[in-house]
Length: 173
Image (cartoon, rainbow, N blue to C red; front, side, top):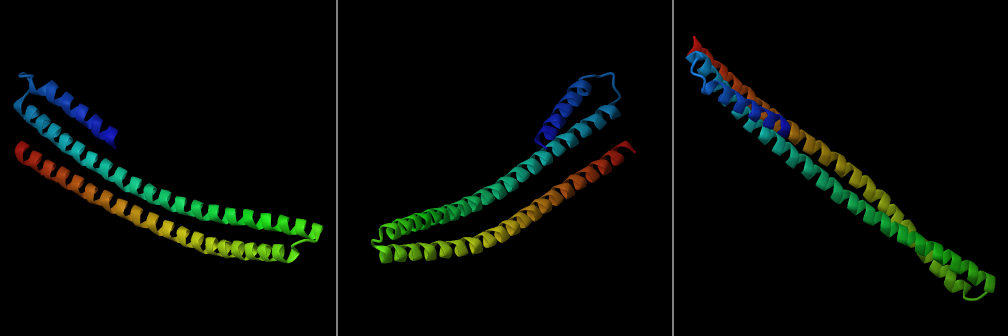
């Protein structure tokens, strides 16, 4: 949209330069083109606001998504560390059984690591479900707000064009 607004600015500039300095053109045409260039300038401003609002809304949405994704990664990293601890405890238990030394201590450490891993896994499963639901709700809310902003700007655009058409009809007729 910003490039669209920029193109309109160039068009307005061309119309203004081309027809405002030429005295051979009829006054009504010059008036019409002056009004048209004013309308295009107003449209450019509206389109610029639309583009800015879209950029802000979408960047906020993606920033929220990035924070949620980071939280999910941290949770899965903690689970991975717990899995590593559990696997290490399993290997230690196998070595203790092979040497027949400290078997009870190794079994207790292995059971504790297993409980910790299962606890973190259950927590991660629940948290990921909640994160997914929150993400969907956040995207829905954000896109709804974006659509409302688009609608507001479209109404302003349409109102401005209607007023311009009414002004042109009043002056030309």
